[in-house]
Length: 290
Length: 154
Ligand SMILES: Cc1cc2nc3c(=O)[nH]c(=O)nc-3n(C[C@H](O)[C@H](O)[C@H](O)COP(=O)(O)OP(=O)(O)OC[C@H]3O[C@@H](n4cnc5c(N)ncnc54)[C@H](O)[C@@H]3O)c2cc1C
Ligand code: FES
Ligand code: FES
Image 1: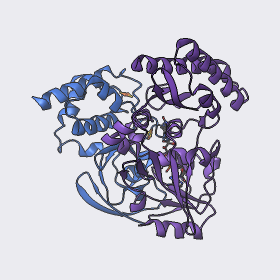
Image 2: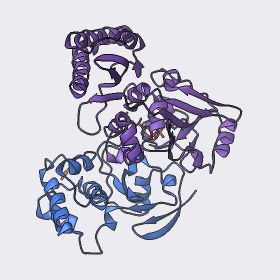
Image 3: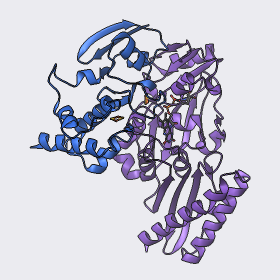
Image 4: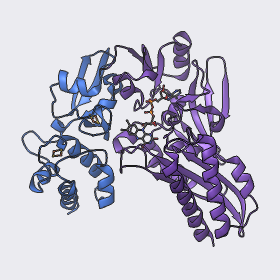
């Protein structure tokens, strides 16, 4: 049962921020509602005692996919379907485009927003590893402040972020990687559509001849939250991309995942799968680039 | 609160509680019981309706969020007593057994055909991946959609 609550449809950001400043307790922003509505309906703890929803879909500040020369800026009200329909995103941010197509079902993608996905910060938020390897930043506003921080710093723990109660995420900014980069996104889930993903990996790599110039690696779902592997990335820099090294790197990724997860019950069977997946991603790129 | 929207082609204006879900408004207020509730959490697609031409789960939309939009339910797909060609093909190809998933399936498939009149089998599967059917095994449904696309193209 839906609990009795009110809903506001602010016409712009200022009106929404004012409403937030007045009612910080028991208020939730709602964008696509694909987390909020079932959460309310099932009386989930995260949405307990909600009295007011603030719907951001009528606010121009959180709309639109703006393409610049250096970055693409995605409004917080843009849905995964909006992203899938954008040809520039498909071309310039292929991993984001690919991951968007794996979210839920058509019906979910028609409502669910990219911003809602990482603000919710479920371990299985599929867009997160991809946004992390793109070095995405999050634009956040309150009545008294405006800041932009790396998504990697924004995410703090499962279902927790650095967002303050009086703040709204307005946009996600993604630097367009230089042409040297290739990469891939992989999701292993239970069922074709509405699968809660069990393992996701994203990787971007730029090669110079046969040498790794730069590599960025992130995982989701196996780790408690989406995680970048900076140590591993540093280690791989300058190394030759050859089979023996790719195997070693895959093994190290597994070890690092054990470190961050502190061995969860599911790691035992996930781990070999992750290592194999990562190895296959690397091999795919090796094949494509040689 | 006041909600104004176009429902199956007709302008409507209703006063509802702000926390009412769209599915409840459609079924309980407008008596449009073709829209079914299966899971209530976005997983089965039985509650699918079109919102501004896009398939959405009406159990995941608040009635208030439908303000100013255009909603089509299964009741708006047929022309009076005359079934759409998609609906006819569902019958011809045996794509309906218990029928619980059918309204949602038809709406997902018609949203697909509106946007993409000549879909591949993969595209059809993707379009109905959010609609569960426990009876048919999907094959007949996919055939019905394919045939409809073929007829429309011809
Ligand atoms: C059936 C089903 C299948 C799903 N499948 C997948 C899947 O395959 N992969 C996946 O990753 N997820 C999946 N999800 C989860 C969900 O759809 C996503 O997390 C979605 O992206 C959330 O976005 P939303 O706009 O619907 O969020 P909402 O429900 O509107 O909001 C989610 C949270 O973020 C907050 N919020 C939203 N926007 C802002 C903002 N701009 N500023 C501040 N706070 C904000 C809300 O207050 C709330 O706490 C699925 C959900 C369902 C119901
Ligand atoms: S009832 Fe809405 S998706 Fe199942
Ligand atoms: S016909 Fe029974 S669920 Fe599809």
